[in-house]
Structure formats: C-alpha cells, structure tokens
Image (cartoon, rainbow, N blue to C red):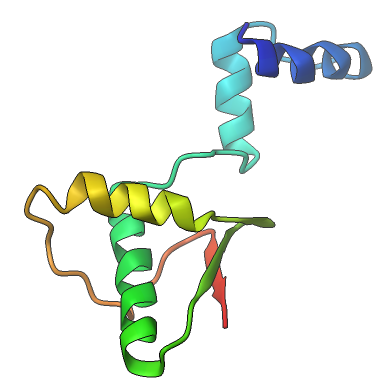
Length: 104
C-alpha cells in the first residue's frame, strides 16, 4: 500500500472486523465514503466560472469547500493554467455541483 494509505489502513484494520484487505478495495471504500480528493474537470470549470463571475461583478473572492476541507486557490490557478491552453467549453456559473459548496 502507499505510505499515506498504509498509515490510515493499518490502525483502522485493527479496529474493524469487516475491513478491506487490498489497496484497491481501500481506495474504492474511501471514495464510497466521500474521501475522494479529485474534482472532475467539469466541476472545476463551473467553480472557476463562479469565482470569476463573482470577482468580476462584485469584486469579491470566493472560498470553495469539498466536504469540510477548503479547496486551495492554487488548485484553481493550476487548473486554469493547464486547461486554458486547450479550448474550454463555456460553462454557466449557475450550474450545480454535487458535494461542493462555496461560501461568500
């Protein structure tokens, strides 16, 4: 197992009787429980559109959260740098996204 996953899996394995045994099973369970660290490109496009619209219209910054964790502004910068070199579809800032919220 990967080192960070191993650090979590090892103590958890001792506490749980019905535990996943393989790395693949751990990853699928973590995703099922909502601990997925990746944000799909379509969702990132909506988040970027919302942030840019709010910055342009109201002059305010927007903080986004995935679950309880704040999504770092650096992730948006990296996404824009990678994806703006290719043609991106126009995305409505009013589009909804599951499991992601933003606070004003």
